[in-house]
Image (cartoon, rainbow, N blue to C red; front, side, top):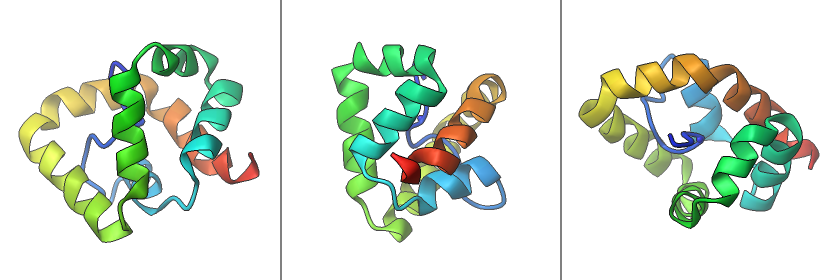
Length: 103
């Protein structure tokens, strides 16, 4: 998670990034620690955006099925924009999603 879309932004169907976001077992502190370590520029952006921090906290508090639904709804509204954003920062988000459980 766009300013930072480590956030609910696209569909969780066959996209590995969206699957990782929807299915993560990481907590908000784990995600932010991984973000700061693995993608420091995105971590700085997030720390400057209390609204995005709240969005991520709310998203991670949802059950997986609700996350998937939220991602699908967001994709329906902003699919093209989401694709552009994830083309730029998708690899960093995937790295955070794959390592956050270590923090």
